[in-house]
Image 1 (spheres, helix red, strand yellow):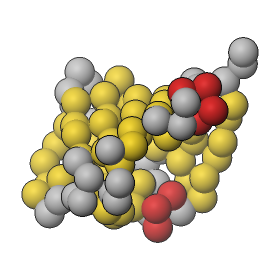
Image 2: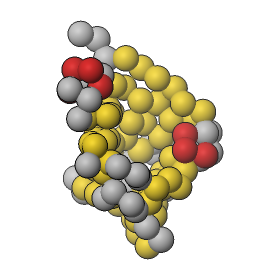
Image 3: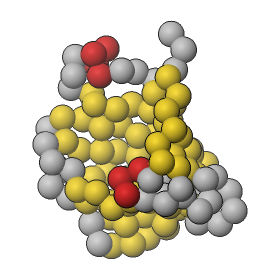
Length: 110
């Protein structure tokens, strides 16, 4: 199966556009996994602030550096780091510097 590529403008109200390379689809994961994708965010773009309701989201940073807002606490994240946003909490992420940010995103029902 070839991954489905999706380009999302203003993802979650963010800047620019974000590219998702979907590695699975919901129906393949029995609807428990809502998203499993490689995500690319280019400089000047972002995934905007959003709160998770009935789901949690994990990011694994593959390349690039980002500014990550973890429910109001802003920090830098680097390749090899993992972030986790539980049900009822919010986050946003944007590249820091001139390199694209690439990460794995896993969105699960809670």
